[in-house]
Image (cartoon, rainbow over all chains, first blue to last red; front, side):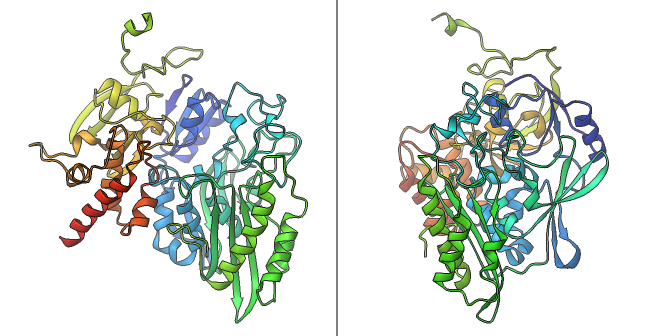
Length: 339
Length: 184
């Protein structure tokens, strides 16, 4: 780990000042990803700004119009087991509990989870080129070992995936990220929070370097009954998703009012395709329809060799997740048998 | 083997070496930690992890360094009663917190914690390297109250790897303690 100085500001204003005066400064909260990356020399901040003591960011409270506001410093554990989250947004609770381990969820925060970086092998290995870590150096993953890499929204510069489970559920729920910066506060819809790699893979998100996440706001709950978070991975627990699907439906009798589908493990951001979701609107859910939705979502998917299997895996995972959501039988995060 | 003769340096992991980088070495920062019930005034460099502080500065070798990257759980300790990976925690950030390590679970008279007894009773280890982390994790699991079935125990212990493969007996030990707790 490189040397760095340390500050523990007591207000959001002071925290913002600490980073605005030093472009090599970084905020740290749970540290479960940043400290790891620093041990690999992938992140080398010269100044760490400890935000864990900032006031007012550890609360979960009501937001306007029946929504819920989850402070950026709320731990993943606290959010997943919060009674309001479990009752109104069980999809979010399920996705959080599908990720990492109990120890990591205790340390990791809601804001930090959004900002975690890809687990691409080449990004983590500073002996290899990587456009995300060292812009312009190249992307060995395209012709290299790419079993865990993206199949949608890739660019010639980067085929990394975003590793979060939580963010996939937040994308399906159309959460909004509340941030503060030197010019005040702004809201970023979750769909616009993470970026596709394009020709700037070093930029994971649209959060500016001098901004801080204050909270995640969830809109009025509509998907507490028909939902699932289906995560497929190389071992049954404590592994990143090869493919995951957050699926949710609002039903009126036997017809779908609105459906949401977000995929994890397949792209540089949680992957949503609203036009595919539209295929379900006003319809009685049935397998042929799910197959059409899955085809639409995976249309244009591209494999890079080792990850070719993900295209078919994702297609089938979408169909299975939609079946689970329609039946109101969400995937258990304990019993991993897929019903 | 000249490198074996190098003295251990306070505040640094011997295998990690001093942190590299330009600029002057920042001052050590005063912090207070309550470790296994004892309040300690300490001075730490910002990059010293809680794990390295425990092992290298405080000679509490019970907490183990396995992967040092939050992937194995051998470094699990209780921070304010919650289990965390001490390898990914910067000590300076835990100023004012209470830390319980494997050394702090037994009573002052040496009476083992019920989870320690259960691990012995069920032969829940072979080489023993992951065991302090397994036991700290299991103690937290019981307190959390989210796991009752064997499947739930396995899921909630997935952050602790055991390369000897003592999992079956580890689950037995935890199930035993949970049953005794439930009977109270």
